[in-house]
Amino acid sequence: MRILDPGPQTTVQDLGRFGQLRYGIPPSGPVDGFAFVLANRLVGNPDGAAALECTLVGPRFEVSASCAVAVTGADMPVTVNGREAPGWTTLALRPGDTVKLGPARAGVRSYVAFSGGLEVPPVMGSRSTYLRGRLGGLEGRALRKEDRLRVVAAPPPRPWRVARRALPDYTGEPTVRVVLGPQADRFTQTGIDALLGSAYAMLPQSDRMGARLSGERITHARGHDIFSDGIALGSIQVPGDGQPIVLLVDRQSTGGYTKVATVCSFDVGRVGQVRPGQSLRFRALTVHEAHRLLRESDAVLEAGLREEIA
Amino acid sequence: VRFLPAGDLAVLVEFDEEISVEVNTRVRALEFLIQQKGLPGVVETVPAFRSLLVYYDPRAVGYDALCASIAELSPQATTAVLPPSRLVELPCCYDDPELGFDLAAAARRLGLSTAELVKLHSDAEYLVYFIGFTPGLPYMTGMPDPLTIARLPTPRTKTPAGSVGIGGTQCCVYSVESPGGFWILGRTPLRLYDPAAPEPILLRPGDRVRFRATDRGEYDRIAARVDARAYVPVIT
Image: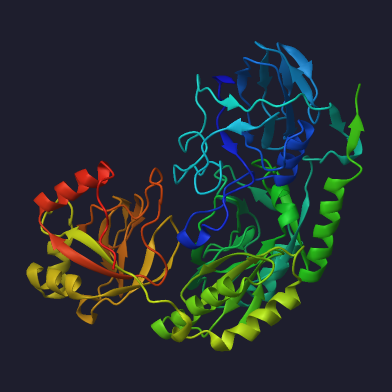
């Protein structure tokens, strides 16, 4: 596979690098794991095969051998040799075919999986790119024009598409589920009410480290500093200005700001698909409710999505 | 200990609200016990000053069951269970203003000569409470009291990797180039984080650290060997 035009930030990701947070290295991996896994399944790959994550505008690339690809996630118009092609669908490519992903009409991040997966050397057990740490992926960086990536040879997968009713809607104002804490007791009731009762707009400074939001101030009861502690995926950190930051896959491993709540794992991807200027709301669940919904979200992924195509 | 949910995939286990070797040792001992027992469902752990963040797979273990088994282990979490810690030597060049650019100013502020400051700093033994924030960055204790110093009034926007600094009661070694408010006394030629190395991270939670004063000539020689991947850090 040869990159003709990389797009603003296209990186190689697998499901992430685990066990390294105690050394300060974040997991990385896809921001939207749901869309990532479906892309791999559409081309017959294991869920953790390395694929591309594209941001706001996709790449243009050429393949030199037959393979299958699938594009999921943000709604970027896909063309193969200039002809429109569907997303969330197995696409068979022939040698010399050129694929292009245009600017996203909805959502932020799209995923391109190749049958067999992308071959880059694993670092600390993962092929994911950690941009700030210049680690993993292709030389620890985003893809550039004329980069070449090897696609592992694989038998052609059986083509299918994700059922229409199962496609995520990235428009509108989503409600993402959170579990309050670990430091909810450091905020006033007014602050918690603001978090759960008003809309927060995505700021353009957001990246794979954190989604920076702006809205009603989340007021602290006593100071915004704590003794640094570990930061979980989806933690909503609130510094002194009262504005929330949802920490994502490239987050710092520890930090010294209070965290009012934590976005549930099954909604983290949805946060990552909110465009700058678009807004979202938060709703609180108990841990046990969150675990029940996690099982439901697993079940959605396992069943009822598949539509065979000729 | 106290358990606080951190979303659906992690729980924060908190000890007493203080920064001390005693409390942090219990944190690291609990982490060690969890690893050693192989508690089912635990994915990874992140120690900090006085808390342990435990990532788990809720498909493999429920929240209540996990908290109960951690609560059962916590009384055993004392120094006695920890394996002997490593002592890591960090060569450090203090006496070149290009590297230790705040040494003279910090000495004046502390009412010490630069030689006294260097001796105090390099005679001490430091303990790594935990690694965090950026890859390989140690949070350390053990700085001699006379080196307590207010942070820089205006933080620097860029501090080179390897810079050895002091601020408040803390000593810090920058693992990557980053902004910061520490007074930079010197620089180590070793890389606390090296993404291209087979083992990218030098220091671990619980390590003891000593700085060995080197002159610029030795600093450059070690730096060249580090570049060539020919330098083996002194770890005992």
